[in-house]
Length: 445
Image 1: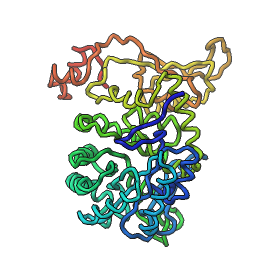
Image 2: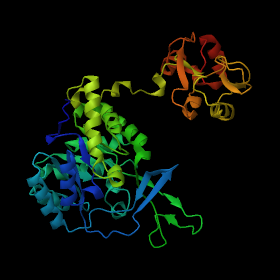
Image 3: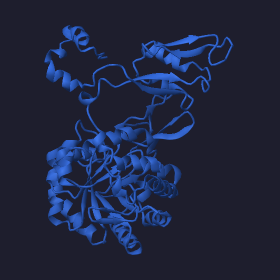
């Protein structure tokens, strides 16, 4: 049986599945119930400055019968008294000493306020802190949350303040609402953070009611930007996670990373861990399906690890990072073409429409005999000599494995864009591109 235990900057957890700092981790009742069902850890809903929350806090995007593909919220940090939160945190840690209990904190930008809340929280026996530098709404207008995380100097400064008094590990939670997330990550490391977590929610406006013209969600006739989460943000989260995990300065620091953003299944968890996360935090999926989803996460990851021969999660954490590259290092000589399996084709012709209207016009509709079929039905057929291997047809095809992208020997030299520009810098001059293409006998699209 695979061993799912982790040690996250000194914080022990029976598995890498943690509740994110959010409504599901708002009380002792919820966190203890989650632990009973199998969750390995929880990041307590952010405590700190007094707030008043509003009604109609959530807006969602549903897509083709699937509920909550994306969720927007304008909820603030915990609106319960801080003393009550601290008592309940201590209760949970006493009852579940072997589970990870991390407390998310956020206060005004003063050294005294940050150090005070850290000292008070440490008295609960919690395993560590998560500094909320990512909240994009409400708190940011008050100079907290992402207003801190968007300025690397502030990120470093507050982290240093906390590290002066903290005796437990400190995790810095990063905002995605920034041009280059690597900069605040490096700043947190310079501030001696024990670990990083990302991403917090993405600034968004969920939609507009076409009858009333009001924004969604609607708070008494008004609306505004909120934090976007849910399965739709997963690709963004994976990108930003990989940017951090593959950064040389972050790698040298050896700080672990907790991955967040759109995680719903054990497969999502594995993807985050392959790109460098040691733990994963989940919120929206729990709000949709409840705490029970962790059972499938545990079974799914365990079975996958057994199939792959992995004994511990450390056998595969970061395994995909060496495969991350930039366009300049892609192999321009690598060539694929689309091939359609006529036995699986349902003649919807979506591949033809997509290729003809939005790609490279290399699929024809032909009638007559095809694989013994004598009907006059039109069949999509790829002209391989004209196919550029974009894979749009395979993406729109509704039938699994009907269209395959097959590698062929194009005769092109295996060379990268960076190789070309080093050899012939003038290739960047479009006036000379045709001449160079002929010389190199390579198609550069």
